Length: 379
Image 1: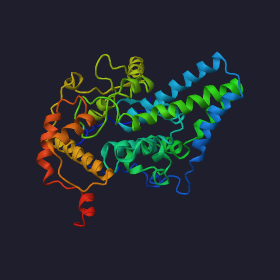
Image 2 (image 1 turned 135 degrees about the vertical axis):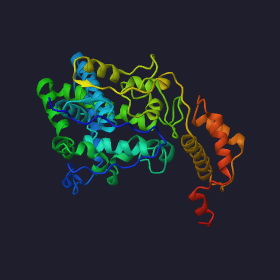
Image 3 (image 1 turned 90 degrees about the vertical axis):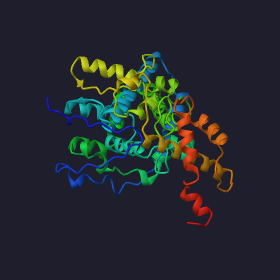
Image 4 (image 1 turned 45 degrees about the vertical axis):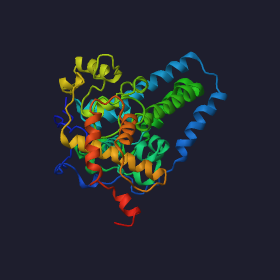
């Protein structure tokens, strides 16, 4: 069976800088842009919710519809977690070209746009996590923008093929990416043909909306609520409730500490359904080379380097500046007590809190955000 992709290259721990690869000759210039004439329209997203929940008043839902909803939810969520996220965005395992396409189809059944679009945007999120360049940081841009506002903004609808050129060389993936809702329409038609209106409303639409919001909660909630085991230079958190709802994605701080691991639940009690399914697929040879976090990370041991502590300290100072801006106060240096209270709220249970605070205090007098300089008229 044809090999889908070369062995995955290690991704840096959050906070490290990256050097772009040289484009390969196989990456066609013709796939640099996608759907240049497409005008994004948020109304289908809104109307989908109306159809899903309004339709429940007009159909009689039976047990078979509930089981169908659960089955489609798990199928779609696996497509999101194993397909969009762990395989296409992070190359956390290897597979054949055939199953690579299957993963892409499963992913796009969740109606979260094209597989290359999703993976390219997610890679950008990791490069700029919780900075002003992060497309969906709840810390920077608020809950609703992080939850779904960013995804319906016109400027975010193009696929950056340069950022995903390792997969853009496959024409079948480019074709899927340029027809992002084809799988959704076909699946809906099949469900309706088999089960009628109740299957379409409950089994198909309600489960689709549930998949949407469970996925979106990783962007909007998993950078706000939960615990931080590792220093990552951002606000990623581990949240057990989100981990259950998303088949393992809620162990988000673990993921940001080692993004290219196929396993996101590092401890034995951190339930990761996606990883368990991948292990089962590996046993029968469908996938292989599941990448693992370093043993010390599984034990919860991390010794962050100077660059990572520097980024975490800068993040803390940015947060303090943002609080001043929201309160319409002029820039001033934070006190140790203010930084400690803010850090304890932003980075709960982080074992390196003292080192981050000490670095932030040392940086405070020389570090001045550009926004503050502009506000003071000194830029």
